[in-house]
Length: 409
Image 1: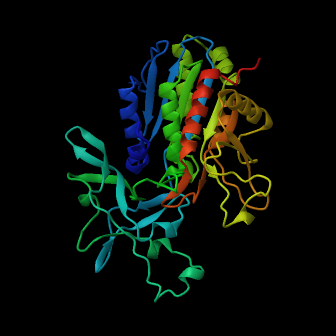
Image 2: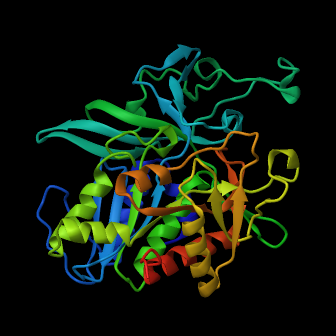
Image 3: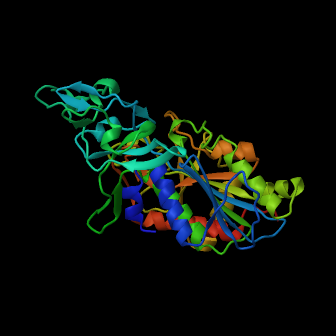
């Protein structure tokens, strides 16, 4: 799978899941439906989709007493969500938007944006979903410095007033610009359309929209398709992490537990085998972490400053699922596999974000460790990471799938 294409075309979770499905099918994976009976074959490769925006894929050695090795991440990124199909019109037609997640709003000004998501179309068979991307760019022009003299010394943006993208002049609605047919409703977003690029004198930096968290999705998919499975290797790609995960396709849902139960049942196991697979398995909650920004050293713990291209970041905080045991187990694996790593501790007097790791560790009663690659400008329209770290993370997850490090010996 080409990383740059994956980043540039992954506008929304619907696009991301479609891209993953296409690649998994090319690699011999078979789609299953959650409501069907499953007949899983040893070394078989399978995936399940929820809501068109979440995906769980797995491969197993086929043993009744299997162990779950799970790499979990998310398909969504902060952006703007279009409200309905009625634009605001005052000489220019602008899309009426609200915030989706904690986007760095000023970074979306004056750059190419695109409308993307899904629409629901009326057909002879009923309501059908269609993933769409606008053929045109839109833009949110900033206010000129002449009219906003304090712009360089600090200002706040009002989403309802200032973050409405220009659709055109004279357009009557929005959905007609992205698709034909009778559209009943839609989930449409305004997302950055900046092409990924490499920066630095020696090509050290990877810059792109949605590095958080598509690099984690990419590494998880690559690891699953390349690994020599030991136990049952699972990738869980959830939607809606940026708004709390509390949806039917989010990490707080029954999506993953239901899939794991069906795997055990198909392998001939019951409640005891399910508990064995969970107790002796482990979760990697894979979500990018903060690199220390050289212009703002006061924002980071002075003893722990993660750097780009410094290897897998093991994230420590009460908001994360990492504890001493899981951190030690992962470090042992990474040392054995020759994969570099670094520890991250948040500055104690600053707020720390959260991931889906704690939800999954709690609901599945499994050991878990929060990891990611270091990046700068998190939640910006264009984020920056280290080029080498994507491969470091892929190597980490591959080694994890091949070694069942959660098994208690």
